[in-house]
Picture (cartoon, rainbow, N blue to C red):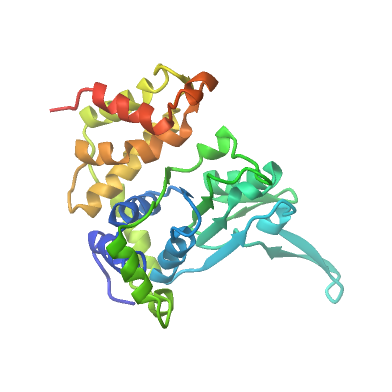
Amino acid sequence: MNVKILPGEVFQKLVANIEKVIKGQNGSLRKLIAAFASDGHVLLEDFPGTGKTTLAKALARSIDARFKRVQFTPDMLPSDILGVSVYNQRDQQFEFHEGPVFTNILLADEINRASPRTQSALLEAMGESQVSVEGERRALPDLFFVIATQKPVEFRGTYPLPEAQMDRFALNFSLGYVSAEQEVAILSAQEKLHPLESISPCVAMHDVLSLKRAVKDIRMSDELKRYAVDITRATRTAPGVQLGASPRASLALMKSAQALALCDGLEFVTPEQIQELAVPVIAHRLVLEPQAKFSGVTGRSVVQEVLKKIPVPA
């Protein structure tokens, strides 16, 4: 693990390693690693059993880094995530016991089952890479990545994420169902042992940090920056949209497009990367009018219509 790997190779190695476990999801893996490499966080929203948790575990096992998983429940408190000070009778002083947020990769499983108070405990961590506990600020590791999951079909005992929380996720996408042939391959792969058990780290921590630095060096022309901004701004006046995407969406679109360009072996961003990422970056940030929801309008359909109308830079 001491051999240095080129940033572009790091991206490809991660995708190839995860594909040993997650079959037929190359597009989703590209999005996941793009968010990971561009300092974003991901919300996976899909039906039960499609591999959300397995995907997060596969990424964690592909990197020589710390990984923690939190199963969110309605009775969970913010201190269960951030940590708490405990009095040490021997030393006669309080000692801070770090919560699971002090890790490199955090899997927040079924985040919408936690109360809004506990959900908000992640806001500062995701936005500032630090937490405030008992009046003291504590920095999180240089590599801090949150993969949150939630099921869209369950409403009882759940608390929908507020707009501010949704806006903290750089990308939101689903895995969906694989083809019949790929599902048969999944059954065959798990006859005796789960493929996760055979996965080992393929990149080291310094390789990942090098990847993150390299993403920032990918060029994006002023024309494409304007293209990304025009897409975001168009959602604010789109029919049926009550609240459009903020400048944070434009920033996330630029950074993730830079990461995807690096994955594609390019030194600059092209319109194709922006178009591939526009829906997962922007759609979940939109607040639709009630009547638009009832008529079948979704955030995804709004962004898709915007992409058809905005001219692509030559």
